[in-house]
Image (cartoon, rainbow, N blue to C red; front, side, top):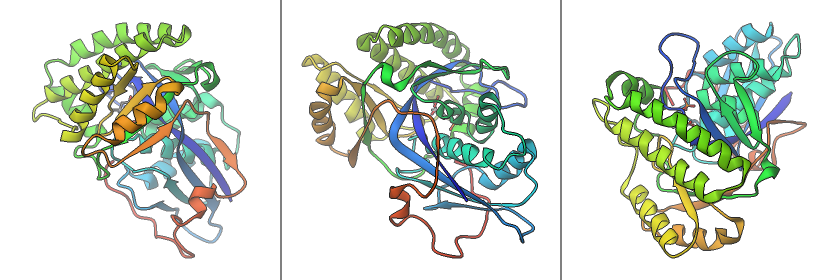
Length: 341
Ligand code: PMV
């Protein structure tokens, strides 16, 4: 039996749009920060006497077909025996917290342990993105760039987690599944939003600015550009037909609170993925104050604390948080395809 854990990531320059055609290629380059403590675990073991794989998610998460992913991974990694795979997460699933990224990164890492030939990191990143695009960025720690292409340099670490001890606070404003899965949201945006090409073009300048801000540890530039990149992603999605609105009232209230904090002299900056949660970046020394301010916003259910995190790891046993209650009992859940994320 093999356990692997992987962290979620938050995009500072967003991936929002696949290139047309097969191959799960992004339309633009994105850059993310891997998030310590927002973690998924994957348990994989062989099923020697079974004819088919068994795949489960606990608690059940509406993530795209894990079963199909395991079958595809087995084919690509040369794993002949059927497998039993279980994925668990320690934070709300499929609600704009990138749970599919950590889930597929953990699953890919655990599956690799069963490969006939040990695969390279590039091959694994290419496999992870077939489950969820952003999962390839969770295959590395720290600040990670993902650009279109299948070559060795497609997913690279821009800086390790230790480079910059930022604080990341996640204001959770809803725990239900997102209204429109990101895959469908991206397709609709690319094919119907008149702003899509402008979004991709503007993203190139954002990428250059964020790379430089990471290099020089310049929070004001990083935060300003990440914030505008997130707003432009959502503006482009709002321009789709029918429109995509991932925010709740509390999402807007948190945006206003972050702007109020800045006016009062606290450098805090937000970003938002395809869901109602708001992730806020600030200096570690300001994090208590920012956390209190976010927690006091009406509609904020709780605030999770994170910071730059590391790459996936193989464990000898279940992570402590998974052992305490979220695992299904003996006999487990039967494999069944899950709906879209
Ligand atoms: O990895 P996916 O297919 O769930 O898409 C993720 C999309 C965003 O989270 C909104 C942006 C990103 O770059 O992570």
